[in-house]
Image (cartoon, rainbow over all chains, first blue to last red; front, top):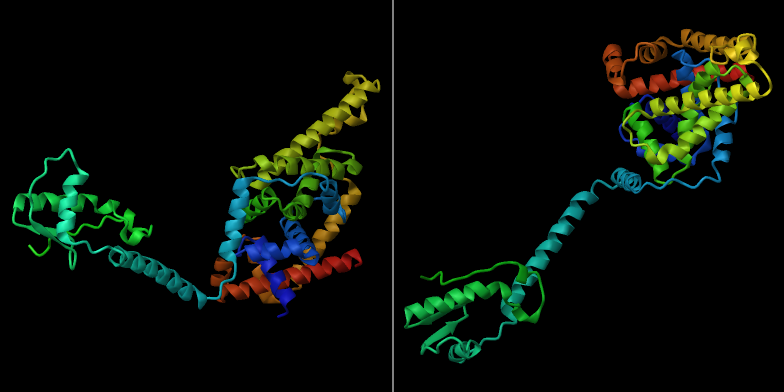
Amino acid sequence: MTVLNEKLEQISALLDGELESAQSTIDYLLQNEQARDAWQSMQLTKDIAHNSIERQASAGFSAGIMSALEDEPSILVPEARRSVVAAKKSSATVLPFLRPVAGLAVAATVAAVTIFSFDNLGAGQPQLPGSALATVVPSLAPAVVPVAFTGTYDSSDRTYWQGSDEGMQDELNRYLVDHTEHSNPGGYQSMVPYVRVAGYDNKK
Amino acid sequence: MSERELDYELVKRVQAGEKAAFDLLVRKYQSRIISLVSRMVKDQMEVEDVAQEAFIKAYRGLANFRGDSAFYTWLYRIAINTAKNYLVSRHRKASMMGVDAQDAEQYDGADLLQDHDTPEDLLVSEEVRGSVHNSIETLPVELKTAITLREFEGLSYEEIAEVMECPIGTVRSRIFRAREAIENNLKALAGE
């Protein structure tokens, strides 16, 4: 079967409302005058067989209308535009083997972004000596009554405070947990600030 | 895609700026609209002009078509209104020319709203119709069965495939080949 015959067969099925994916056939019809003539004569045959017409259109009737419409502005309904573009996209030919590859590429990208974001969490974190930070905390909050607290800040495995005063230790650790979401690890703005990560003394 | 969905798809194409899609709608419905108008308008010379005006009005109104009714129903209404307007304007013109409204029955324009068939047109139509039916009669049995079940019994391709015990693709091909044969006979009749 020739390509033209195959197309004409699709047009015949389209007129019967029996073509599933019609977009490419409609595109073909819009681009091909011969196909449009076939569309017209097939419809005429159907109309005659159904006894639904008494009179035929003269040759060039549709051409006369289209010529009369030449000066008319094209209609632009935004919703229709979106719908047609979406339908064309969905019917666009995509090589089947490319689909899983494209899926993998998207998954790999998401994974990479996630991994590098988490990597930044620890990589750029300055390793401050525990005592230095312990003295800074009261000065940052002058309204708070300074309390003597001897302890160490352990960031090797988990980020938490360890000290002799358990009440103070719990309070500081709660503070850390509550403010984790505001941290900007490594100085890089990434997706991590939007993810709540709370690690609190899981060794206990 | 059903016939109604197809029409709506073409409408959406027009609404999206593809004017050429309107040509497909015109070619699909032109003979039906002309036949409709010719039943209302006596002057056969005017029929195509009125039908053309109806299509142009339809194009201008397409921006507001939402698909609540079938496109053909909508177009049919426009064609009827256009024909009525034409008849009213003709009647006004006739009145202005001094024809007494009470003499309307004698006046040529009084029966404009009645159904009319120009004998010449009918003759052509009968000939064409006869050619279509003769063509179907002379088709090979598989093609004849497929096209008959489709056009006269209104069966879907799937139902025809079941009846004829063959794949849907074969049904599609047989219907197309039948139409091709009928069309060739029509062309021969028209002397092309």
